[in-house]
Amino acid sequence: DSYRAVRGAWSALFGSNLVRQIVLGLFTGLISLLLGIGALFATNVSQFGIDANSTLATTIAVVTAALCAPVGAVLIVLLLILAVNWSLRAPAIVGEGVSTFGALGRSNELVRGNRWRMIGRLLPVALLDLLFVGLPSAALSAMISGEAFRQVNAEAMAVLMPLTGALGVIGAIVSLLLV
Figure 1 (cartoon, rainbow, N blue to C red):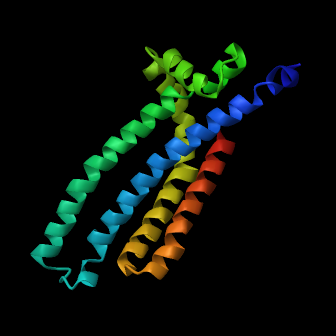
Figure 2: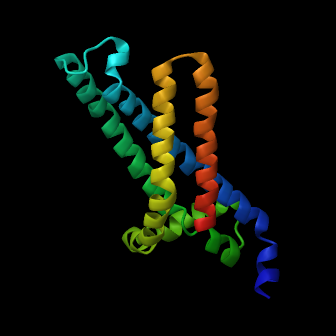
């Protein structure tokens, strides 16, 4: 009975999950890119002909961190807000019969006024996702992005940047399975 009741909602469920994964994946990718750029300047200043122990190297590391950290923090907050706001899209589709994009809007409405309660309920799943998918994916993406920018040649970029995208796709699939 449950299977038959949900079968008609598969396209809306798939569509809303796809939109969610793409949007959250873009935010995660931007955060990873910022980490990669930060890692590049913080750890590879000698590649630019700058003495790693000089005041200039320290200044570059501090300025990079001062620029990347606030932007990264804003992206992380937006990522968390979207994740919580869109957390009730599946119940809205199955229970109320709304469409793919209607489910995202309806989920926003349902979460309004209950964000802290939703955060408390989603936190254990989010921590598992972060531990087993997010951190490894972000670390690998940051290392790959940093290496691509360090080498600064088209051949390295052509190989390493698609690899970063592939890691994002794999991370999104694993996250979807975890949820």
